[in-house]
Length: 328
Image (cartoon, rainbow, N blue to C red):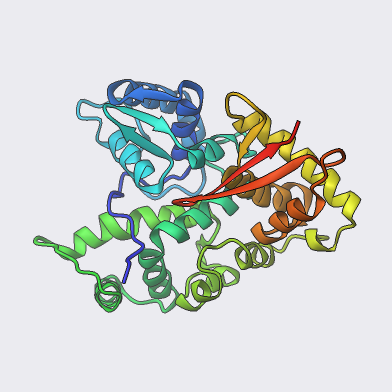
């Protein structure tokens, strides 16, 4: 049984906003040696120090990323970004990935640590895909108001039940607190799921194994439940729009994504970037609830060589699903 769990985060990796800053650097440079990326990341973090200080959901004693002799904080963020699939190390350089480009370009607030609704939608989905077997027992432990010692035991039992194993030789309670809980509690605060009153109950639906049985790839039901949890008002379902309305919206988002993610050569766009970006932004900016299935169906049905010359060409490689090309 596959365990969906991140292993690189620790107490230093508590702010999702730093992943935005990190990917923005690589979105500009495309690739950097580790030494250069660390230098750029720490310099950028210094420029945003006041935003970090003014962020109201920091943990007590939490410090920002800044230049240090060992660069522990920046290295941890880079390793976790790699594990999340936002950056990739090839030879001695870090490269931006398709998901990293999305992270860098989603609509954002003035303070990068205060995530916009589109960023919340994207990051929650990413963390559920990559780290749900850590997040589910943490959220359940908080919901049940279990103390730290028993939360540790609850977590160990959950991981063992999933077929995983834990090897903590020294002070397991401290390791659990610093390496397991602290970063995730910070992320949950960034996502407005964890508040001073506890877990926002509207989001509990995401933190159960049953949810993933119904939507294992988080491409359809996820967006409907996110819309409910955020209590968006006056939302229209993409499926219910008229054909001309669908066409107009698709053309607008195809052009927007092309400007953000265009590939060299002919008019071509990564399908996964289009779907991931458009579903989050369409819902959070334009109040239109779309899913991967609804967008794929519309692309297929509306295709016309003269009136709508955009064609989805499926090629399944890893998490990618192909390209959207413009027939010219």
